[in-house]
Image (cartoon, rainbow, N blue to C red; front, side, top):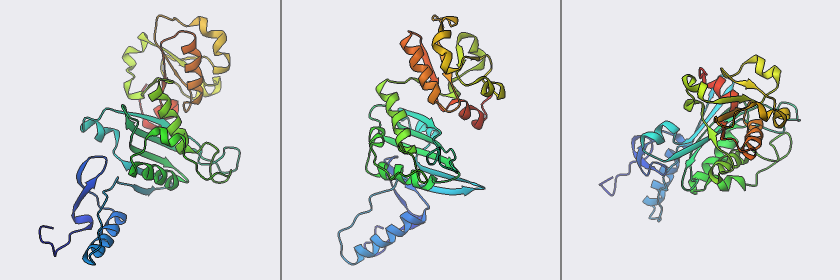
Length: 277
């Protein structure tokens, strides 16, 4: 405080939020305990300084774990950040090993540099591990390109050869490098679907269980042979269940000369977020 003999730490004080770039309230036990330790060190005449925080949070919601770090897309918009984001749905560990379940990762990053600005992760298992990895990267100012190169522990019961955090980094880096162009569900206006060609590249069975209105079903395995049925003068939006087959379809269309984008997060994102498309 302004009195050199009175220390103020913990939930009652504002501390530097490294993503906001300004002081903010953060009522979390981890930062509060570290601040208490630093205050004690300073009282003992040690040269110490609080490095700020990125706001790492996790909680349990019924059978789900929800992890959060940094800032949300909405908060970044209010602050005027030039922000991009991607959504991926990787398995928590190798899909061929029993018990594998999908998690959803939403990763926000700076358009100009790829610096990581925030992440939200939801899943039934191993969410804490992944949010901690992203939080660590953020505390050192790392970018989505760095996530591509992280070497993380792997064995089939615990993870995948390409960890979920690696996958988020791959997808985000593809966007920044121009290897993939995506569109978000919130950017789609059903009233303008007549100006687009929406191609669902999942199987007929998946399509029958639910799809975007006015979408046509062309499974990715037969896409090359059916490209002539599409009009090159109209933009194309492709999607699958989670994004991977959509990316393959995006590349096929792109290399055939179409104006095409891939729906971020696939149909799973649309269904789980409640978009009426």
